[in-house]
Image (cartoon, rainbow, N blue to C red; front, side, top):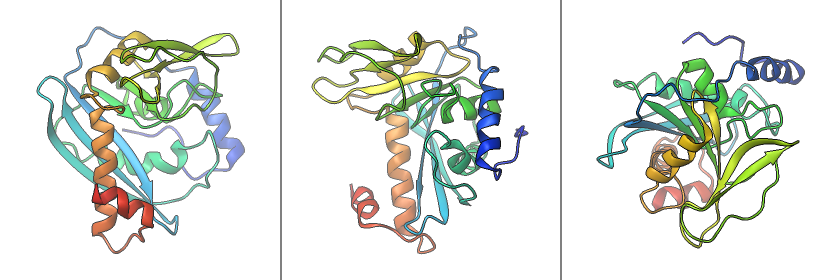
Length: 237
């Protein structure tokens, strides 16, 4: 797809892009069903020169991997909280482009509208692809909430400046919750249901969990990308 802006731009311009594109995010479903979910994750080489992205296309009903791919791109944008997509999205989109089958929905390891400018990486990817997308993050970027119940499936709203921007979801009994938000072309209830349905008894959705492992293994196998001890330990699991 055509990207409506360059990736290598000054920080102030990147913020302006987010402000402009946030108004185009659709926060409702169009009635389609979700069978094939593309889980996305990315990591960086130890020297921070390369972003390595992975995509796992997951059959939600059959609980099997349909296909998986990786792609790497040179890092062209500094690490700035809230501007993650300008570092990761080029590699993620390149990995997605290798899919032979079209996903019904994309799940990102990051935020959707639960973002100070309501335009996290899940919204950015979803809008570029014009495809339903969901953000499922391990930590909160913005907003406040009470703690959800301890049982799997419990959730509470995440609010920011009086607006509901996501949900804090207990995806596995007794473990830390995840932060789920609309990316694009989906509503919050369906986003939460999708995360729970694709969890396979674990904290994280299986597509993004497997994408994380895929990226770690790819880094370990390619001497072009220096690997940190933490990444090596992750790949070994």
